[in-house]
Image (tube, rainbow, N blue to C red; front, top):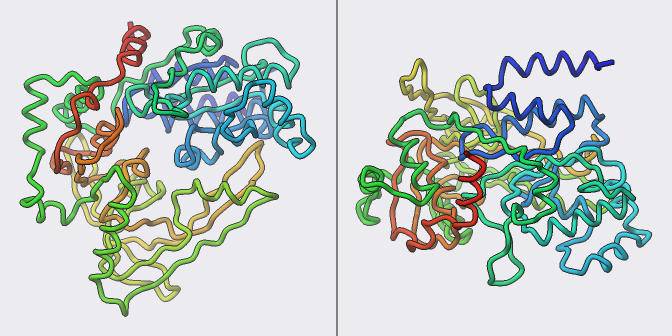
Length: 448
């Protein structure tokens, strides 16, 4: 007999999901492994959160594990890295040695996770290579004593192979996860492509980003690109209200330190995070985007790190300026938000108090680490890596220094509107603008 709680939850989701999202949602609720993809801003993260919520109701929170390829991505879904779930570090050893490691007494918790899991969520799966997936598949089979694919665990994968490629141990190219026969056998052609774009509404911007994503820029797309480029020497006024996206952390940190130091020192306030972790999980706090120490001054440009009020535009990526502090000492921020109402762009200013938020890392329904901090970052500049998942109304993409395929697209796709996007610096080498042909062939094949 169906659980009435699951039925009620599924009925609610039908009111909030698009038809393509609903198809993937129903497949997940049917207990099937699947791969969810789509371009940036197509609602993958939103859908994943709904799937996680529903599967926790169906299977029990203690049997649903949320993971991602990187710490930043894991933070966004309140989970851990896939490596942490399996408890084998970088997993560079051969499979026999990995099994021996997991059978050691101090690896009991990792063994228990693998054995008890009913569902494993894997976000940003494009960054997991085929060799690593095959190792994890074999570990799951052996520890669970189950020869079914992935030891019988339902695997929900999400990601975009046009974006960041698999992490490699050396300078050579790694195989994508879809080049694993084991992964393909597990998915059984259950590939769901989200085509509706929610982040951008302007047709020319949507079309341009689609061309950049596929590395096939038409004359119209090239004209659009030229219209958004600025010389570094002439971009000063336009940069003033934009978040600069850099490929390197030192560049972003240097700009933030310089701009903050130019503001009145007497208005400075320091906010220290309150951290806690269960057992030896304190290292997981390093994956959180919220800083250990946040230093602000009146006039500081900041970016919001949470979805606070989506109706009025206070979402992850909203930018503003610190205008003062409350009696309790919390920052008051004046945000400039961009929304589309009845297809028309509306820009508004909103004053809001940035009160502490708690980021929780959970597994099996239990909190294993958490950080409480003001949900802001300095935002004269941030890295492209940290910007993943954000919708930023005003950005300046610093193209010089981009070193990885997909990085330029990730940066550009943070933009919400055409007016809110400018590009400075030398464009990436042509080879970095072209997607990996293996990824292109795979995505074109499943799109048919």
